[in-house]
Length: 539
Image (tube, rainbow, N blue to C red; front, side, top):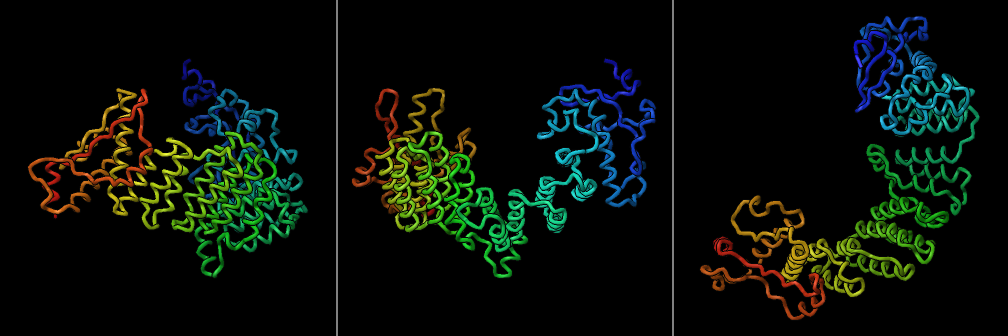
């Protein structure tokens, strides 16, 4: 198609991704007056700018700028509202030229507003005003919040609680605190009754400002004086986090912007999950994280316990997969001490009593091992815990992350034999994978001193950390040996000796098997002569 012929007849060619769009050039628009429909659009000499999806389809809404962009404007916000009303009058006519726009090129959430030619130019119903506000909120560039408020105030007979909620929500998102207070006052002045959404926004506003007492009074001052019948959507707002500025201010005035300030929130949250268990899992995960971070481990455990008790029995596999991430979050946010570890172990056993169909995985064990970080003998206790879980859940419960965490704990404890055992099993796992799939390359044996890029070519992050752990084990072991026992001439295997008790404990510990069912032989860990000489000089 000849583009010169198209432009000569008053059309514009716009390239949107792989589509060619033909649309009329925008009408001449005066900010101080309405659109001049008598003007011949074929005589327009200025070419429209490309790049915006709807920029060429609607008159440009300028804030305080006239026909000439170089002239300084002196218009007020009321003039901007008149401009927005004038632009909405031309919305239907201009959108008729944009029907060829593909649905996948429209902004999300605007398909129902921009493609429907039945939308009147001027809102005539409350629903129409709400749809126009939604549209102007998603324009590019977005309409200023104060201009939206003036546009909303121009139709007092069409205002509703839903339109006020939309503006309040947008003002909270933009941190316009004074505007939120003003809109709430106008809502009462208009004699519109607040609904559940309005109360939710008020609670969110107070929580973001760190005003926990006001948020709690807002909840109790409404229609929900009985905490056992508070909707779940209101409880979810108390799990929000205040902004940094207001958090510092609240700490300055010795307030407590933590969940410990609201005991009933934690104690009564479980009474609200009666509708559908699947619909509250996202809230449950957020609640578990917030209570665990605030130091209320018992409340977080109680929430999970009550959710499991109210779940349909027997629990389905989908429901089990949905609740396991919440349990893993609880374990990953718990304090790292012996008391918390024992409390979590008892809680996990209690969860299994309530729902025997729960299937813990390697991620659950990995998160539980984290609580042993600051305890005494974490390596030995970690391997005992892994052995107990192996007997209950099988080999799948121990993966590379679990073995690595046990090895790191053992290295910190000084149990080099446990580190050696974990290395042997990890390398045996690699060999099992290589025997099953011959295309997988066998890990290279590190020879030092060499460049890191030569030692780990195309190795994954998991194998790199195991190789680094292997090198650290060699150094720790060689430093612990007397100088007389080091042989500088021969590169003999130097590795810690695994005790008889540890061998008995590791008898059934995650030894990979090949396709024929035979155990894979472990890979010997050797130390080169260069490493021996370097460590000898260092000692």
